[in-house]
Length: 209
Image (cartoon, rainbow, N blue to C red; front, side, top):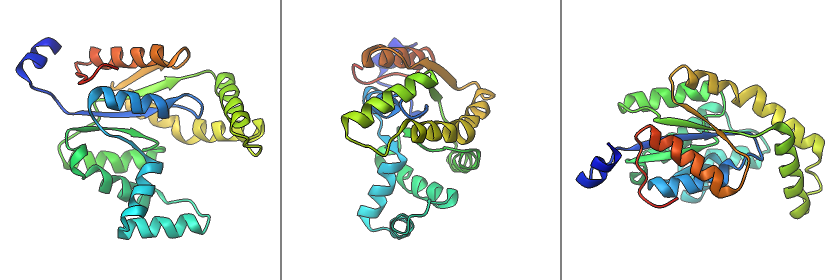
C-alpha cells in the first residue's frame, strides 16, 4: 500500500502529536520525525515566540502575560496554536509538541480539527522510566550550568506532567491512535521505532529518518 502511494505520487496529510515527560527526548525526536514526514514541528514555546515576534494581537497578549510572570491560560494557548495551524505550511500536516497538555486543551484541539474535517493520525508516546528522565535532566542541568535545576525541582516537573498531561493519553487510547515507543537507547534507535510504528499505520515519510 505504501509503495503504491509512493508510485502514484499521492500523499495523505500526516497530523501527529508527540507526548512524553521532560527528559524523554520528545523535542529532539519531534524535529526528526517532522523532517522525515515533511511536516512542520510545532512546539508551544515556538508558537508563543512566533506570535510575539509577528506582533499579532494574540502575540501581544501572550507577551504581556509572560512578562508579568503569569501562566498563559488554556483558552489563549489554544487560540495561539490554532492561529499557527492555520498557516499554509501546516495544511498538509503537522507535529505538535507540548500541546495539548491537559484535557481542556484536548477538547479545544478536537473542536478545531473537527471543524476542518480532520483528526490526529497518531499520538507518539515516548515512554522513559522516571529515574531515567531525572538522570537525563540532571546531567543536562550540570552540562548547562543550571544550578536551579535540582533533583527536587526536576521531580516536581515530572509530577506535574504525570498529573496534568499523562491523562490525555487515556483519551487518545480510546481512539486507538496512541503508539507507545520505548524512549531509551540511541537517538537513531528511538527514531527508527517511531517511524516503524507510523509506517505500520500507513503514514508515508518523505525523507530518510
